[in-house]
Length: 258
Image (cartoon, rainbow, N blue to C red; front, top):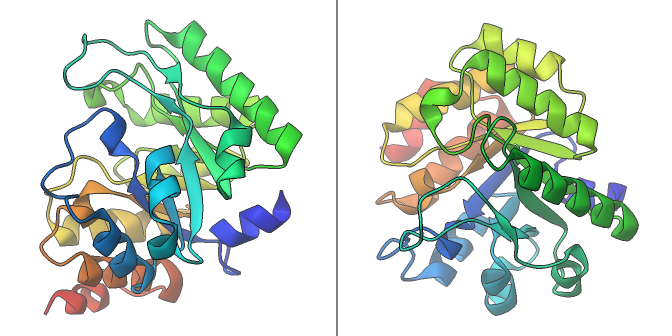
């Protein structure tokens, strides 16, 4: 387990994860028409790990290279499916391990209509992770997908729930300010990484959230659409890596876009 965690996190205890697991349910085209090229560009510009689907892990091993991989083991409805907050098992942890994954990721939806099933799945994946010595990232979101329900208090609560269930890493939404995020981190005794949201936002805004989350004790980021929808993914990766691993200021990181 420790060896795999050390592949995900650098010696500074932080990680920069590129998230590319959206394609099992969301529309990712044309942004990910050239998936391999984006993975290669991210690898060459500071990304430590990749959250990906089973299909990406299976088909892009050359482009992934030595970057750590965290495979999505659950999934929800597609854009064409019925609305609702629910997930299902996509594969077992040992199947991800067989392909060379260093970790797995699954959702946790406390407070949602599907809470019982969601938390049962989380429990199962964590048990499998313990059996196979594979770190489990719990993506903890209160009430489900609706961001309007994600108050700092609820985010703090569900992050602690993820740790109590035995997750090795908690991935969740940034609370919006350093003071409330410090309370979240202080209440969660495993590393916390923040997610990046739907993408399309201003670079400075996201870099500021990353900087503030780290200052409050966060352990890194898992950013997806903001990077691979960007006109210059490599520059965005370099900017984020500077903040995460070089303790750069937002102004220093913004120079990567010049």
